[in-house]
Image (cartoon, rainbow, N blue to C red; front, side):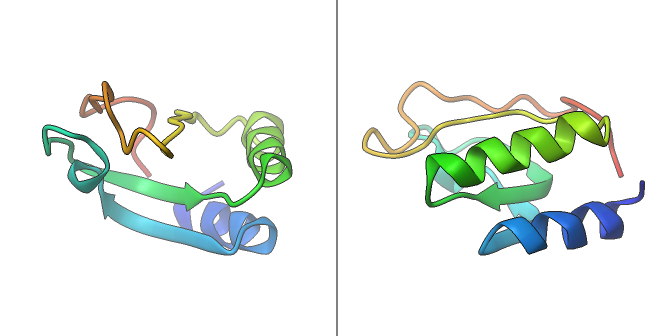
Length: 84
């Protein structure tokens, strides 16, 4: 499955799917390269659906919960997962 197919499938499940999203704005120290595919969920059910899709399609994923603490303690390492 290529990146466009992944984005299209996730866009059917989620209201906000972006590609090459810089991760620095989501951390308190402002570091982090771009995510190949970035999904912003509004509900727990959307998170479940995105994870289920990734697992069923063998798409590597990283689940970072960003909310009240605005990325406190999160550092995104470059090169996690698979490049598309």
